Length: 81
Image (cartoon, helix red, strand yellow):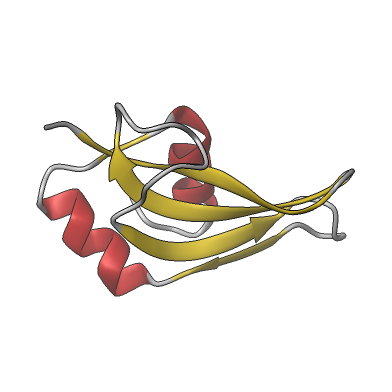
């Protein structure tokens, strides 16, 4: 089983807010997740990124692969993947 850190969409129509989650890569985008690690809102100025850094580092150490977008968010927060 390959585990990924990726975004899942929440929020209303035309008002997306994204959660950073850990999920099996075979599950759908808004499907079953293992754990929620934080949230991301690109519609605020500046963008809001809130992550549980300890849990993110734990999952990276366990071998979870961040998606391209999550990797960029981790870099902005000073967490190297």
